[in-house]
Length: 494
Image (tube, rainbow, N blue to C red; front, side):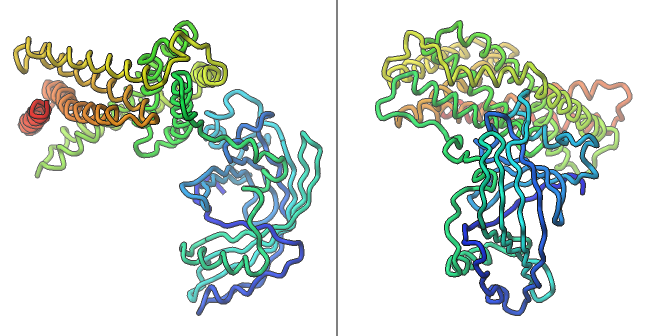
């Protein structure tokens, strides 16, 4: 079995050992319920000594027995009954028994350079009953488990029984119908989210987002914002490594928001305690920006060519094929950077600031007061940049550069105002919304500026055909119109 990603949708119940299973034929009218099959599963669960994976409801195991022996990484899904599972068979895993690189990459942002050690051994005597539809397709599996666990750190051995009902092809209606059936048969609400959590007793330490107190001071707001964006970074990092849609963009935004919180409220923490972190976040944003810009450029190019009836082959190579190659190279460079000690140190430094902050002059002031000052300062800088635009001749290089500066300052207003959202300041929400509109309008314009520069570079290639140059002229005209329309929309809303 090579690396396989799937969504596991199941419900789990505690049950008394030996409790008879219900009759599942009522769930599959016209289908059939297969004869039970017995398996013995032996699993070693790995985590850091501090149980960093378990704290985020993630389990990593190496299991033998059953029909899917190998490595399994389970991560939370989008809803309570779903989990993401990455499975790799032993035939595709390292020969020395080490953690497969695909799995290590998926959890690197959490474990970093910490050692992964065995934290529990779990043996399961499993009886599996498969539910089929009328055509013989598997709809669900019911697992009646007898479990023995041994936790390494506590040296505690536990025994229990549980039921699992997992969808294999059926829909949510089947799962919904199974829940009351299993409860009526003796199933009780599961006391733990996973076998490992029950074995090591990690449930009380599950990571949860920070909450603001009723009367927050500025330091409360700072730490809440940093923790919120730190968690978002941990969410998006493995998705970037998988090249998931929109992941580079979201990780870039997260890095920028982290830096914005530090720079917009410079006296909540002492400057010397966060200077290095702020600089590293800026570099991370720049690195992500290169990969994101390639991604955007490719999307724009594809959209432009899609509107052309005939695209010369040499033009398609220049705007699509060559751009795909550049994007792939930038993504490889990005994935490498996300695996370096420098990046992992940024994560550690961020955790340290959140866990052990050094309060600055504004730390004990009311959060609303400090947030208001930060938003007003960012807004004044935006208004100053907008006022200065009038001193330049429209559409000159200086004017275009100033429009770009306005967009960046609008983004700073938006991120600063967004940080104040937990305080419930309605005017701050309105400020953020207006800044987002400016950023969007002028971001569209900036895209056309960058794209027209690329069009000019491609048009200058000596080997380009006359047909390709003709099409490029048409594309440039369309981009110019799109840019002017975006700016006019911005000016009309001022």
